[in-house]
Amino acid sequence: MIPAAMLAPIMIGLLVAAVVGVLLFVLAERTAPRAAERLDTLVGKRRKESAADLLLKEQARDADKKNLMDAVMPEILTFQKVFEQADCNIKPSALFSIALVMGGMCGTFSLLIIKLQTGSLNFFVAPVAAMIGFSLPFIWLWNKRRNRLKAFASQLPDALELVARALRAGHALGAGMHVVAEEMPSPIADEFGRVYEEQNLGIALEDAMRNMAARVPNMDLQFFVTAVAIQRQTGGDLAEILDKIGYVVRERYKILGQVKALTAEGRLSGVVLIALPFFLALIMMHLNYGYIQMLWTHPMGIKMSIGGIILMALGALVIKKIVDIKV
Image 1 (tube, helix red, strand yellow):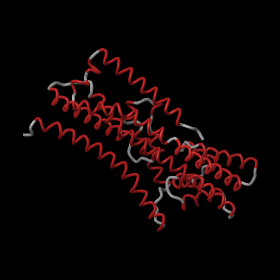
Image 2 (image 1 turned 45 degrees about the vertical axis):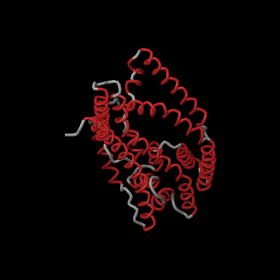
Image 3 (image 1 turned 90 degrees about the vertical axis):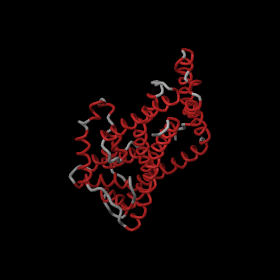
Image 4 (image 1 turned 180 degrees about the vertical axis):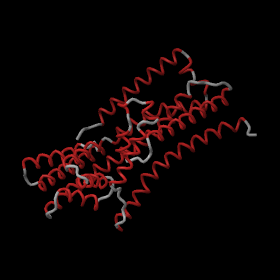
């Protein structure tokens, strides 16, 4: 029988281990596949998804649309496009189920810890812990999508220059897409390869490129698709156009890197100032719960908590407005 005094540290340790495990899973997914992709690219063994694989994946997602996810969420909030942009092989209903399990575990652990410390159940903290646990899988999904779109944007200038060189060598535009799919790493190789496969299946090249632009929300890619569409109608040197677009994109990202370096201190200050109150509140809950519970049990404490959250939200918006410089 485990003593009651030791049960609280064990619960906290299990919760911390679960959070660390999720973080390690995300970090390992970001590092290990990249090293493997580099090695596979060097030896010519990088695996690409064929048109049949993409078709099977889309069919599985379409079948899952009528499942749990769409039963509890309206159509406007569907995560189908987010899953596609993140290149996530998990079904939406499976991720939603994982989020429910993690939310229930975090809420239950918080109730047990407070029960062991105070001797009574308190249902004010459990919903906060449950919401944090519920949001972790979706944070992982959004981070995966953000990293993939960021990698696509950084690879786009090289891809445009590669297509331009293929056009100067006498290849057609579709063949230039195939060169990008063969020579460059994921994710841009997957998207350009999908355009090439759709063209081979009978879809017009302009429509296939518009489908790619709909899948990948990137402004520079929209310029590329629009330039190709205009050149198909009016004529002109497409290779020169692509070189100019690639040069503009590369210079814009160079300026964007300088802006991020200059605003790094402000962004880090904003993260620290926003996270510090919540971090201190979690520490105080475990050190002296009776002291901090006045913030949600006393009427004045409730007003102070609501006012503090509103002011923090306004401060976060102001900081984001200052450091978010459009290039």
